[in-house]
Picture 1: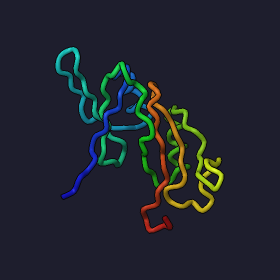
Picture 2: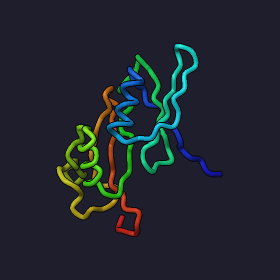
Picture 3: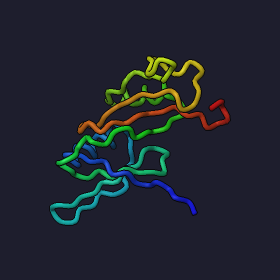
Picture 4: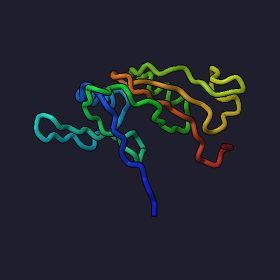
Length: 138
């Protein structure tokens, strides 16, 4: 039996503001925007090429509490340029070396070791990670 992760809830203080950020800035696709009464609304969005979506849900007790979700890309430089071009304050690229977090991409460009980060307007934190899936060295 396959067990697939297909939806992650992202707690936000303002669903409309978060929806605008993820669509206009991060380039996610809107899948669902559903309300049931005044107290329930879910907005489901999917990153380009992903099988897993996020659901923006208003949570005044915990907006910004989600940290460390990973978006995987094949080219971290192109991903950073795209985020910056969309108005997102993306970090510089970094990797983990013998002394911990180090500026710049992994010197060997090995999969799973070059990152950048960004946050949504509530402070939910994302990592973008470079992974080669085309037969390149891992």
